[in-house]
Length: 436
Image (cartoon, rainbow, N blue to C red; front, side, top):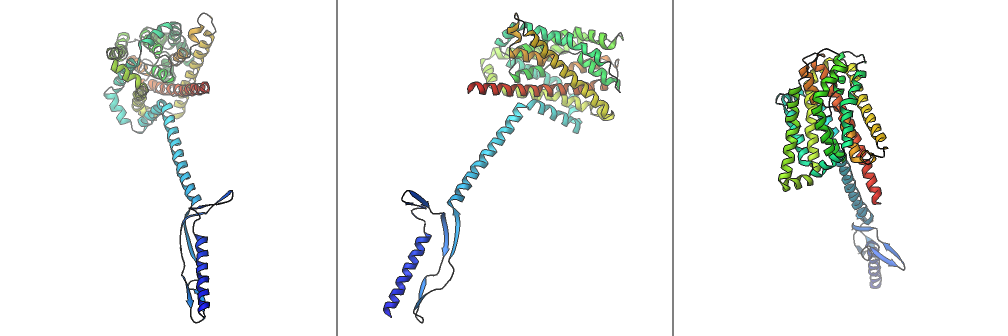
């Protein structure tokens, strides 16, 4: 009997040892068999079983529980998959955030303008208050002050070098593009002020700020853009009344406020530009700071520029709600087609001029061509508003005249912003291809 008990105990020990060998991880979850390494699948686990006991009645070994409970906590593969998933999730989130930031940076100007329009339509009161306190004048002043800060003396020399491109741009702004106003006046639309407003807009000089801002964003020659902007707006004091009388008024005797407009342009354009340039030249620290943060200053200029459509849409909201949507949509389409035609005419003209061997080096340069295309294809809204207000209803209701001009101004900046984004992406691809 004693021998049988000893045998039973020995068998129980063997059984327990076998179970222990089966359940324990082998060599810290890995064991080598020849050339093949076998990994135990369980990293950690919990199990429970009752020890074997000797039954004195039947002289046999019994287990108080018939089931062995094993609960795996996690596996090596599961832990690895979990870490990989976390890393993949982090990388994916980082890529999404980077893509969103890149989209906002590349399309900041059109997004800011659209945001200004939406705010003006949803709640015009803040925009009307901003107009009451002439916020648009301060924003224009600030835009050209920033342009003076950014402007480098070397760029001024480059603008002088590119005088043929500048001369063509001025001719396009003041002579060529106003010719389209006579064609626009042939369109029949109710109310007629919509057509007249677009025609008046076509006779204006270039934009006071957006052309320069877009030129800076695309890496064009900002000094050339500034030179065309300043000169065209100053010469526009003479050319605008002539264009209005020849193509629109046709002998109605419209009185144009020449000296008042000249004073306005000097105060809002020349003075801040000169002040910004003087500050840059007077302090090397300011110049270095501006050069290091040039992109931030361009974004600030875009924000200031977006205040103009915000204020104008807020002012014109009541009139916009009283006209037929179809008529206003047609006026918007006319403005869109007009701007696309101006872009195409200027681009084709520059392409033809670049084939001239004598002036090929000027018109073939990308920084000059882009500055001319952008600046020569745009028309200024603030000057249009000043002109219409001084006309005192001679060409129709002032609010209805301004309304399609507001839409045309916004659309031309959005179109050109998309064009600038497309140019920048192409430049990035070319640079990446060169690096390869």
